[in-house]
Amino acid sequence: MDGREEQAIVSLLDRDPELKKYYEEHQDLEKKLSVYQHKHHLSAEEEIEMKRIQKLKLVGKDKMMEILEKHKQTGGNP
Image 1 (tube, rainbow, N blue to C red):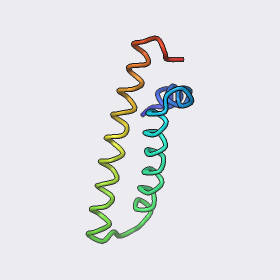
Image 2: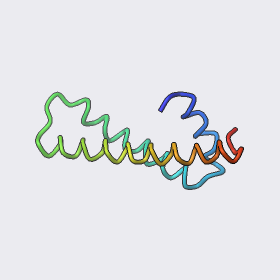
Image 3: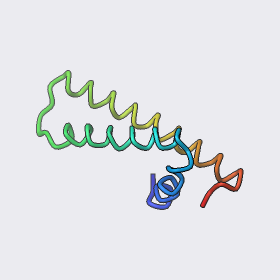
Image 4: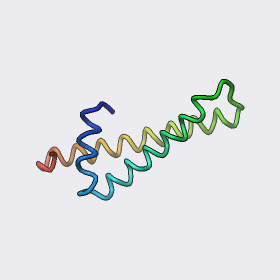
């Protein structure tokens, strides 16, 4: 997600509870992912968990982009 997209999403958070939910989840997953990314060595379980978090984060991003696109189409984009 580039800075422009994130700025558009942030500007819609107060008006779209579903978007806000996905954005907050995305931020939380980003924090969890950074813990694994800062480790020098990961166990097999940590590798699996990191991949799971990455997939969840990607799914959430796709949902946010869908919602953002709907706002653009309906003229609700700031």
